[in-house]
Image (cartoon, rainbow, N blue to C red; front, top):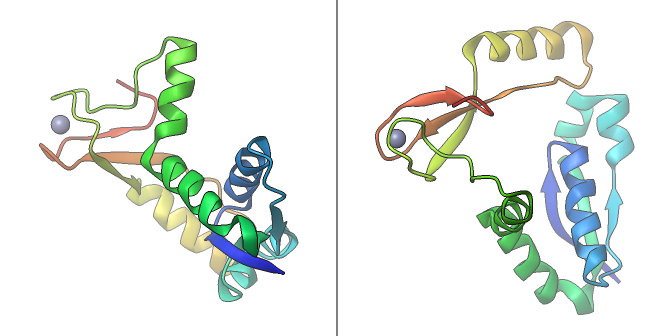
Length: 139
Ligand SMILES: [Zn+2]
């Protein structure tokens, strides 16, 4: 029996998590991704895109998802690529929250209201330590 491990608003992130689980031999599947691609607002109403695993793999999958959420996978990639983890350009803190530029929020609302297609977004990061904000990938 398949059980839902996680729900994602972004179907592509669900596929990333599924691939990561697959790398550890967990036969995960993605469900309802086609709703997000065909009609993103409808996908939101249905609860997003699901990553499901066989019930016997749930605990192992939760640990991998926890590592993914904590940035452990990003740290491993950065180490291999000799890159530094995303950090606040002012104080160097890696404790921040992701947000969206106000202009992009307005565009997303307009797109959802009038075009109902999947909105692309650029992340805006806010340091939880000092309050400084910057755009993802810019130092
Ligand atoms: Zn800072």
